[in-house]
Length: 173
Image 1 (cartoon, helix red, strand yellow):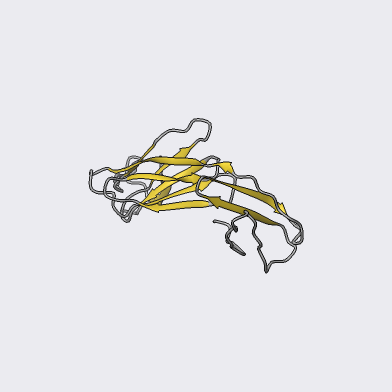
Image 2 (tube, one colour; image 1 turned 90 degrees about the vertical axis):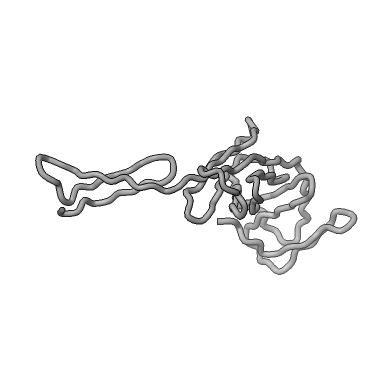
C-alpha cells in the first residue's frame, strides 16, 4: 500500500516548509510540484534542514479499451511505483484516454479496473516511455471433464494465464 503521510504542508514563496508532530524515527520526505517532484528516504533528525531539488517528472499516458467497445467512463486507473510507496489514480471519461503526471521518475505498474470485468495491466518503463494501451476483458468459464476411462473425482484442475490463477477440484459426478 501507499505510505500514509504523517504530516503535510505547502512551501512558502521562498520554497521553505516546516513539518511538525513526528518523532525521530526514519521518515521519507516527499515533494509534489506541478512540473516535478523530489523525495528523500531515511531522514532521521527532526531538527535538521532538508534540501530537496526538484527532478523533472514523467507523464504516463495512454488509453483503456473495453473488449465490447463500450464507454470506459468510470474506469479506475492506478499507477504504482515499483521502488517507492506511492501510487497515483485517475477516473476515466468516455474515451478511456488518460494522462497521469507529472509523476516522480521511475517505473510503474499500471492497472485499470471496472466492476464485472477483468483488469487491464501494463508497465511503464522510464527507459522506454510509450503510450500504454490496456484492455478490460470479460470473465469467462471453461468447462470440461477429467477422464481415466471413467470420470475422475477429486482431480485438481489448474488454469493459468495473464490475469489470475485458479485451481478447482473435480466433483464426484
